[in-house]
Length: 359
Ligand SMILES: [Ca+2]
Ligand SMILES: [Ca+2]
Ligand SMILES: [Ca+2]
Ligand SMILES: [Ca+2]
Image (cartoon, rainbow, N blue to C red; front, top):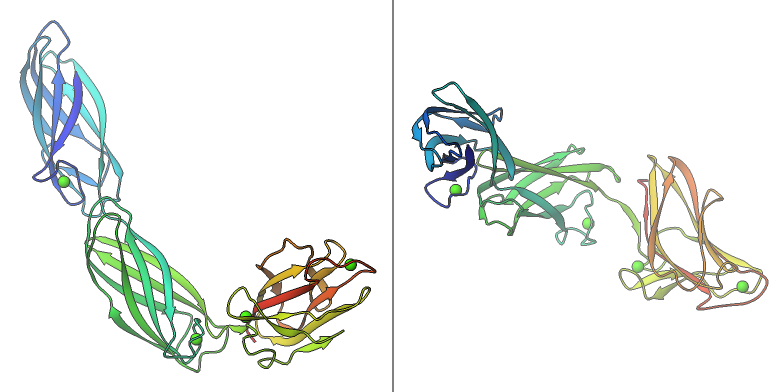
């Protein structure tokens, strides 16, 4: 008896958040007798809509006749999620007492803010692309509207957790609107005190408000991360070498130079190592590359003499690895070892961008 429902509004006939829409129903009577005094009652269990006037009387639907009847005014919530499917129940009762139940649904368009990457500008600081204590950082937050309706009048705020001494200054905290499928940015300047200990984990939580919607995202930062990128050779940290001196080599995964193992004889090894007093357990990561006789001439990494990983052959291009580190004194060793004979490729190993746990 109920064929379909249709929705109309005063714009595009697409139900959208916050709109008052009119629901009409296309009713047909396939019976051989006319249906008289039909009472239609609309109901829903969905709290995202309210049916303003749920009961409607249809005088007569002729035998084999049909008609578009309506309409039920429906108020859609201004905080309904995008693409939410609203189910409505249609109860029809004829004068004769015969009843019919139908379930129908419609989908509602709403905006949806999705967060992208965060860009760090520390040109007012040491310009190493990372957040260090004592720096004033300009953060650019990328966001986009992945929903199906325009996001309007976006305001925002940013919260900093994990550090005590900082200052937040909004640079570009509002956006007029973001069209469907479009992107935009928010900009904040956050100044971190030089008193914040190296390695402090800081969480930036960004909140964007638009209408009755709130979208949040958190970004994790480690302040004053200790990094060795060999861009100043081996002068930044007290490196030790055994079995030959490692050199700074042009050609790097990131930047211009990396540490490179020296040429050694068959049956010998060479290593570089450093001892660090680690304050809190964390992880060490680094980039490595090796060009050697597969299986026999090997780059290996050790923590306190314990083998953590090893690589060989000529197919291992720059790649990053990471290993857990316990708090306390730790000896980190990178070693290149050759077996009794045979050399392949460049016959050496390269290391770059070592990120140490907080010291
Ligand atoms: Ca609409
Ligand atoms: Ca920095
Ligand atoms: Ca480098
Ligand atoms: Ca060999």
